[in-house]
Length: 161
Length: 128
Image (cartoon, one colour):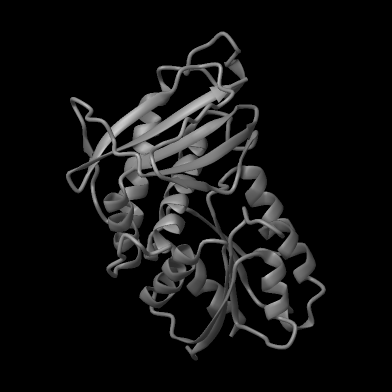
């Protein structure tokens, strides 16, 4: 696997990153939400009602995104807080932003040599699905798809050098 | 162990609740929990009141956790109060930096209540 400082503008996201991203997401859900994510063998489209984003800056720049439906976001918040969170509750935004933040941090810490040379932004959360997201990434997105409580969610990373 | 007053500094209200729950699950009885959403609010909370334990994030808007730690050293009410960082920033340099400017413990997110117990209980036993 390439270390962080071996990525160049012409590269795609290194293949070895995919299992690390998957593991980073799984650990966050298992530890903080107490649930196992199921791998989607045939990824279904995610209802992108909620998109949480965390920026990466430094040796590697880019964006990590978490896409999910409003139902999933409410369920994630409920799992984190141990109490029911309704779909209109603003704690949903906070919860999925924090989940994206933890996945980004966990992923970054798993990359060889990345921990000290890459910092994270505070999370931003977009609601609604009628938008276009254009990052300045010069690699295609690395995306992993899961089922969270039977509902599709996805985690993606795009990087630019 | 006496009931403690804790200050939790994190820009996520959900995370503040999780940290509080984890402290309680660690068997630490809390008499009062003060919350702050950034370092500046945390310093403000300590102007007129003291606490027994501070748990603080690093990446926050307005004032981050490292600057909070630096300024905390001049706060009379915070003298000798153990500060534990709870953060996604798990790099060695962040840990070293935080510990060098006054943090007494460092927990990486995601974390379990057991990790909170392992890091916090010894600090409280040493300060009592």
